[in-house]
Image (cartoon, rainbow, N blue to C red; front, top):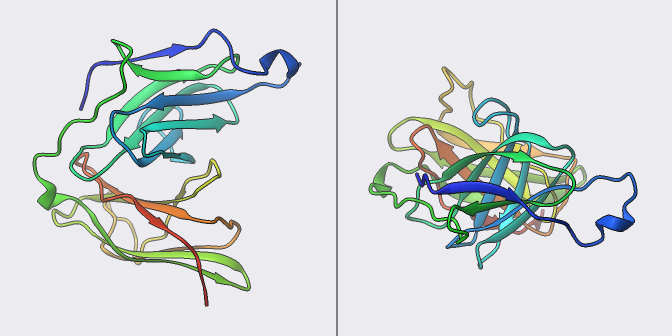
Length: 211
């Protein structure tokens, strides 16, 4: 993992003078590679549930609006061949909080030296039915330390852990078919699996199909 990290706040944000008492709590940044996904936990890194997410574009850039400021843990996941990049930041609400390397350049993630132990997602599917969109995907982790499988409806700020096929035991999630349903509709979803060894699956982008 890279240690060349710092968080700085911009001096202002476009339109802030017209917001009155409204706050804009947002994080933005740029990675040296993309596309991918940023997952966000309110509170300390690894100290809470992942609730928010945003797509990282092909140019490595992302921006995510949050309901509140304060401490948040970020997990940035980019293309195949990299470890995910975890960062803890203090989010302000008077200007975008910018995640950047100490020298001001785009963030870089460390190379993953062993892709053979990464989680693997297969057979992703998003279906549209009477109750809305339903997400499912098969997850497997060769070294048996799978943490969670997450789904993000693109265009929203929401991250959802998918439901495993059986119980999670000692924070290890089982292999098998993961599912999630109802409440959200999107033109596309991002799916990613993460393990306890800083390895991730590829980030899958899946469009809905009508049953």
